[in-house]
Length: 305
Image (cartoon, rainbow, N blue to C red):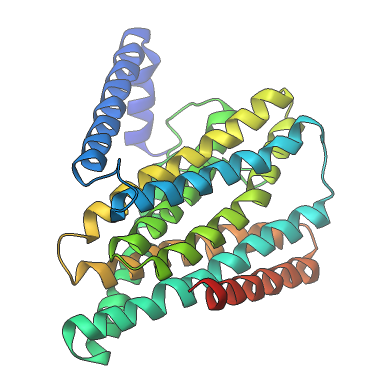
């Protein structure tokens, strides 16, 4: 632990300081959520015909898919490691294909139309992609979280219960997925947002199950494990609000936002999901899952886009 982190940990060891930090953190969270709710209302979130309303509806579907995926954990305590890696690989394949077909390619097309040049359109998407990956890199270092079997990540001065570390880990995945849905609808073109919503909802189902079962294996009750996994889905509507709000006011931000969402999702696939699926010796099965997910998303984009 570095000296700064140790000093902060010692500071928080005082019950009065810890209590003040909890209250301050709660107040900040309430203020941020209230601000996002206000933005959603101002931009027409209560009307399904607006980009914000469509983004909220799409992200709610994805959040419900996470909750639905977690429900079998009420009855299933264990999934074989092979099938767990196949399911995670399938989700990774869906996310990778969605990044290509539903984010990068529409982003380049939109950027070309706005800027009048295909190289310029590709460049603005590329810039957004890099920023999206950097955003997840910083979030990975700043937010304490834990992946099942992979240990703790983030700042080591924050002592949180293990269930919350796992919730934060999946929420880090779900927030950029919500942003992708928001950006997909921000341009007013449902042919971008609908395939993205379908893809993300499909991959959220096995993800919710894997997380809930992982929580059951570390001695959490069935209802608590399923509830915590379902809770991670709430990050998606929040991400959708941010995605619409950031990209709907200035035209060049729309292709950049599509690139940003793609970069964040590619980071999750490469940095988190694929290494996790290859950690237990099931590389071939996991890779077949990735290919299956990629094919399903490619067909979905062709059918719904």
